[in-house]
Length: 330
Image (cartoon, rainbow, N blue to C red; front, side):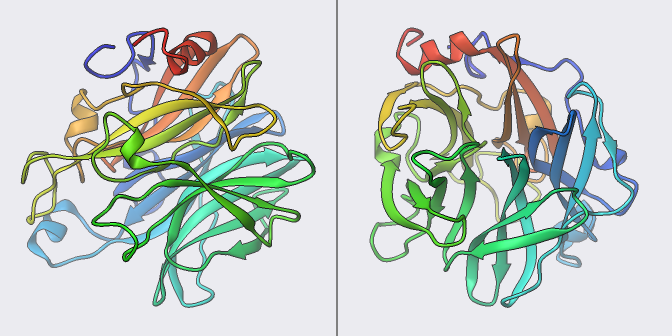
C-alpha cells in the first residue's frame, strides 16, 4: 500500500473535479456527492454549504446553510452544474438535507440523504424519475445517517446500509455499519450489524457506509469510511477548537447472494489523505467516497469528498480492488 492508499488507485490529475467556483449560485463547500449513471448521463448530487465565508466561520460571525446541488456530465470528469439547487427537505422538524447518495434501481433514481432537525440526525430516502420531482419514501428515527441502497433487489427485497449512532450502548464514537431490508423501501427491518469499527485495523473510532455498492462477478464491492482519532489539533481545520479525526476510505467484498456475509476486507485504506486538497480545507485529513461506478471496461470510478471542501475522483481496475479485499495486496 502506498502512503495515500493502494498504489493502483489513481487520483484524477485535474482534481478537484468540482468546487465552489463551478456552482452558479451561492456556494462555499462543495463535497460528499452521490454519483450514478442515469438515462445515458453521469449524474451528480452534491452537498453545498453556503452563506458563510472562512473568515466569518472562524470569527464566529457566521454559520453555514445547506442545500443539494445537481450536475451532469458526458464523461464523468467534466461537469455542468444545474442553475438551481435540486433538493431540500424541511418536513418533520428537519432544517436541512445533506450528504446525498444516488442509486439507480428498477429504472428509477433513489436519493439517500441525511437530515438534521430538532429531534436529531435522521436518514431519508427519496425517489425521482426526472430530478424535478422527488417523493420522500421514508425517514428514519434518530440517530442514523450515511444511508446507501444496493442497486438491485435481493430475494425481492430492498437492501440498505447505514450507520446508527448509539450514545448509551458503546463508549464514545465506536459506531458500526449495519444492514437492513425492506419489502417496499418504506418499512425497514431485519437489522444486522455487518461491520464493527473494532474489526478495521485502521480505525479507532467510528465506521459506516460510503458509496453505494457495485456488483462484480466476485460479489458486492463496497466502500466504507473509517475514522482514526489522532492527537489534539493534529489536522488542519477552520474550526478554532481544532480537528483530530482522520477519515480514510476502506473497501470490502460482500457475498453476491447474501450481502450480510463479508467475504473479504482490505486491511489497509483504499484511499488516505495525502494531497493538499485532501488536507487543507474545512476539515483536513478527510476522504469520504459517495459514488462508485463500474464501467464496462472494468475501470471503477470512485468519487469522494476531500477536506469537506471539494469533490474529487480516483480510478482503479475492478480486479485489483477485489484482490485487495481478498488480501492479495496486504
